[in-house]
Length: 294
Image 1: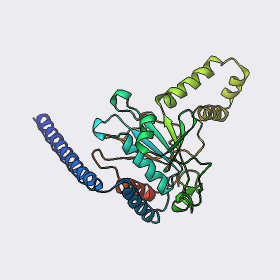
Image 2: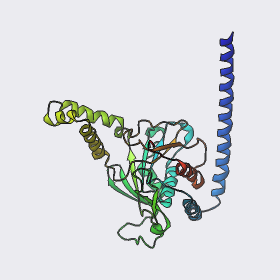
Image 3: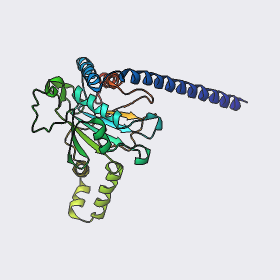
Image 4: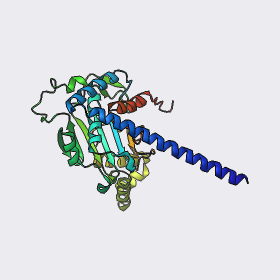
């Protein structure tokens, strides 16, 4: 008798939760349509100027900023993350003073995966491929050799966190990166890469080098870390803030060896991606106290 009663209560609870989630999603979509309609009244220059002023005001209230922002786009089809959304986030990150952004889109091309070519067309900004899946991005279309970094508004309008803490970037300088570093991460750059490196070590297990590594665990860990860094070729600190566009928090195997101190936050499915919603996540990150085991 009690078992059936518990099952009935659980079923009713699930129905109520599902109804609440549907209503909340519809409310966010209705709000997004209103905000999108409001933005359609202005041209892109006006919107950029408005967002820049808003981000500059909010930046003075933040106690810390991430130097490395990680974006994970999950499999949730309702998230609707396309090239224009990512381009907006990149512009916000550059204005607020973030040094680099790593993008990990787990979707396939058939399901709307972000493509660099479409992203270039969508953002209409300066792009430069430094290495494979490593790019340089800016808010203007001028080449870095021909532009004056001190007079175009980029260097003076932002603040980037300087390595105050090795992970949380809570010290500032009154400069913003002239160009944003972008790392496009694929599925072979995470757990499968660890398996590949370990497989190579196993194949060379009889060699003197591997035997010496097996004798010292710290050297073995350092060797694996060096091989991972050599493949990914990071030239920045590890991610400090990760924004997940998915209904549930899931890293999807994203860089498990480099997200030890990363703060993960989900972006509500259905919410309009604008400067206000982006800064809201920065406020949450700014209030996070990382005690480091103290």
